[in-house]
Picture (cartoon, rainbow, N blue to C red):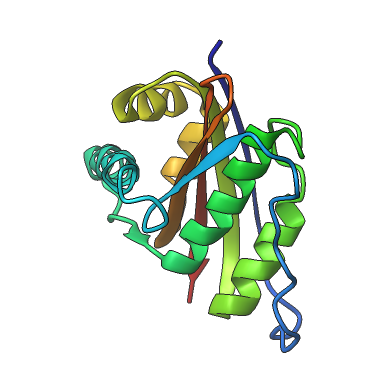
Length: 169
Protein backbone atom coordinates (compact mmCIF):
# COMPACT_ATOMS: atom_id res chain seq x y z
CA UNK A 1 0.00 0.00 0.00
CA UNK A 2 1.18 3.50 -0.85
CA UNK A 3 -0.42 6.55 0.75
CA UNK A 4 0.33 10.28 0.83
CA UNK A 5 -1.00 13.23 2.84
CA UNK A 6 -0.22 16.99 2.92
CA UNK A 7 -0.96 19.99 5.16
CA UNK A 8 0.30 23.59 5.26
CA UNK A 9 -0.37 27.05 6.63
CA UNK A 10 1.11 30.53 6.65
CA UNK A 11 0.64 33.32 9.13
CA UNK A 12 1.85 36.70 10.25
CA UNK A 13 2.88 36.33 13.91
CA UNK A 14 1.44 38.85 16.34
CA UNK A 15 4.55 38.51 18.49
CA UNK A 16 7.78 36.57 18.49
CA UNK A 17 7.61 33.32 20.44
CA UNK A 18 9.81 33.65 23.52
CA UNK A 19 8.74 30.47 25.29
CA UNK A 20 10.85 27.35 25.37
CA UNK A 21 10.27 24.79 22.64
CA UNK A 22 7.67 22.17 23.54
CA UNK A 23 9.04 18.70 24.19
CA UNK A 24 8.66 16.38 21.20
CA UNK A 25 8.57 12.62 21.76
CA UNK A 26 7.73 9.69 19.55
CA UNK A 27 5.98 7.66 22.24
CA UNK A 28 6.94 4.51 24.10
CA UNK A 29 5.80 1.81 21.68
CA UNK A 30 8.33 -0.57 20.18
CA UNK A 31 8.61 -1.82 16.62
CA UNK A 32 10.12 0.89 14.41
CA UNK A 33 13.64 1.73 13.42
CA UNK A 34 14.48 5.40 13.25
CA UNK A 35 16.06 6.38 9.97
CA UNK A 36 16.59 10.11 10.27
CA UNK A 37 19.59 11.72 8.67
CA UNK A 38 22.43 11.52 11.15
CA UNK A 39 20.66 9.10 13.52
CA UNK A 40 21.23 6.01 11.37
CA UNK A 41 23.94 6.55 8.80
CA UNK A 42 22.51 3.80 6.58
CA UNK A 43 19.54 6.02 5.74
CA UNK A 44 21.03 9.51 5.63
CA UNK A 45 21.80 9.15 1.90
CA UNK A 46 18.17 8.11 1.27
CA UNK A 47 16.88 11.31 2.86
CA UNK A 48 19.47 13.30 0.93
CA UNK A 49 18.17 11.67 -2.27
CA UNK A 50 14.66 12.85 -1.45
CA UNK A 51 16.06 16.36 -0.96
CA UNK A 52 17.91 16.11 -4.27
CA UNK A 53 14.72 15.14 -6.14
CA UNK A 54 12.61 17.77 -4.37
CA UNK A 55 15.18 20.47 -5.18
CA UNK A 56 15.32 19.29 -8.80
CA UNK A 57 11.52 19.53 -8.95
CA UNK A 58 11.69 23.04 -7.46
CA UNK A 59 14.42 24.07 -9.93
CA UNK A 60 12.38 22.73 -12.87
CA UNK A 61 9.57 25.00 -11.67
CA UNK A 62 11.70 28.12 -11.13
CA UNK A 63 12.02 27.81 -7.34
CA UNK A 64 15.21 28.07 -5.26
CA UNK A 65 16.56 24.98 -3.48
CA UNK A 66 15.69 24.06 0.08
CA UNK A 67 18.39 23.68 2.74
CA UNK A 68 18.28 20.73 5.13
CA UNK A 69 17.95 21.87 8.76
CA UNK A 70 18.96 19.43 11.52
CA UNK A 71 16.30 20.61 14.01
CA UNK A 72 13.69 20.00 11.33
CA UNK A 73 15.20 16.59 10.48
CA UNK A 74 14.89 15.58 14.13
CA UNK A 75 11.30 16.83 14.23
CA UNK A 76 10.43 14.89 11.07
CA UNK A 77 12.13 11.80 12.54
CA UNK A 78 9.97 11.93 15.64
CA UNK A 79 6.82 12.02 13.50
CA UNK A 80 7.95 9.26 11.11
CA UNK A 81 8.92 7.07 14.07
CA UNK A 82 5.61 7.70 15.84
CA UNK A 83 3.69 6.71 12.70
CA UNK A 84 5.85 3.61 12.22
CA UNK A 85 5.32 2.57 15.85
CA UNK A 86 1.60 3.23 15.60
CA UNK A 87 1.57 5.78 18.43
CA UNK A 88 -0.03 8.25 16.01
CA UNK A 89 -2.09 7.52 12.92
CA UNK A 90 -0.65 8.02 9.46
CA UNK A 91 -1.21 11.69 8.70
CA UNK A 92 -0.66 14.98 10.44
CA UNK A 93 -1.51 14.38 14.10
CA UNK A 94 0.31 16.95 16.25
CA UNK A 95 1.21 19.13 13.25
CA UNK A 96 0.68 22.18 15.47
CA UNK A 97 3.24 20.87 17.98
CA UNK A 98 5.81 20.33 15.23
CA UNK A 99 5.21 23.88 14.03
CA UNK A 100 5.55 25.31 17.56
CA UNK A 101 8.71 23.30 18.21
CA UNK A 102 10.42 24.29 14.95
CA UNK A 103 9.31 27.91 15.31
CA UNK A 104 10.67 28.10 18.86
CA UNK A 105 13.97 26.48 17.82
CA UNK A 106 14.50 28.59 14.69
CA UNK A 107 12.58 31.80 15.39
CA UNK A 108 11.17 33.92 12.57
CA UNK A 109 9.17 31.09 10.94
CA UNK A 110 6.22 32.56 9.03
CA UNK A 111 5.13 29.53 6.96
CA UNK A 112 5.21 25.81 7.67
CA UNK A 113 4.04 22.72 5.80
CA UNK A 114 4.35 18.97 5.87
CA UNK A 115 4.17 16.07 3.43
CA UNK A 116 3.92 12.48 4.58
CA UNK A 117 3.87 9.21 2.70
CA UNK A 118 3.94 5.53 3.52
CA UNK A 119 4.81 2.43 1.55
CA UNK A 120 7.74 0.59 0.06
CA UNK A 121 9.10 3.27 -2.26
CA UNK A 122 12.44 4.65 -3.30
CA UNK A 123 13.25 8.36 -3.08
CA UNK A 124 12.20 9.10 -6.67
CA UNK A 125 8.84 7.34 -6.19
CA UNK A 126 8.13 9.33 -3.02
CA UNK A 127 8.83 12.66 -4.73
CA UNK A 128 6.93 11.64 -7.89
CA UNK A 129 3.92 10.72 -5.77
CA UNK A 130 4.01 14.07 -4.02
CA UNK A 131 4.52 15.92 -7.32
CA UNK A 132 1.32 14.41 -8.75
CA UNK A 133 -0.82 15.34 -5.73
CA UNK A 134 -2.07 18.96 -5.66
CA UNK A 135 -1.51 19.51 -1.92
CA UNK A 136 1.95 17.95 -1.89
CA UNK A 137 2.93 19.77 -5.05
CA UNK A 138 1.86 23.07 -3.49
CA UNK A 139 4.03 22.35 -0.46
CA UNK A 140 7.05 21.36 -2.56
CA UNK A 141 6.75 24.55 -4.62
CA UNK A 142 5.87 26.82 -1.70
CA UNK A 143 7.82 29.85 -0.49
CA UNK A 144 10.02 27.82 1.86
CA UNK A 145 13.77 27.87 2.36
CA UNK A 146 14.34 25.13 4.96
CA UNK A 147 13.35 21.49 5.18
CA UNK A 148 13.71 18.40 7.30
CA UNK A 149 13.27 14.88 5.93
CA UNK A 150 13.17 11.60 7.83
CA UNK A 151 11.95 8.06 7.38
CA UNK A 152 11.17 5.23 9.77
CA UNK A 153 10.43 1.60 9.03
CA UNK A 154 7.66 -0.25 10.88
CA UNK A 155 8.15 -3.80 12.10
CA UNK A 156 6.11 -5.02 9.09
CA UNK A 157 8.52 -3.28 6.66
CA UNK A 158 6.31 -0.31 5.78
CA UNK A 159 8.36 2.86 5.42
CA UNK A 160 6.95 6.15 6.75
CA UNK A 161 8.23 9.38 5.20
CA UNK A 162 7.93 12.90 6.62
CA UNK A 163 9.14 16.09 4.96
CA UNK A 164 8.54 19.37 6.75
CA UNK A 165 9.02 22.77 5.15
CA UNK A 166 9.56 26.17 6.77
CA UNK A 167 10.17 29.70 5.68
CA UNK A 168 12.52 31.46 8.07
CA UNK A 169 12.85 35.18 7.59
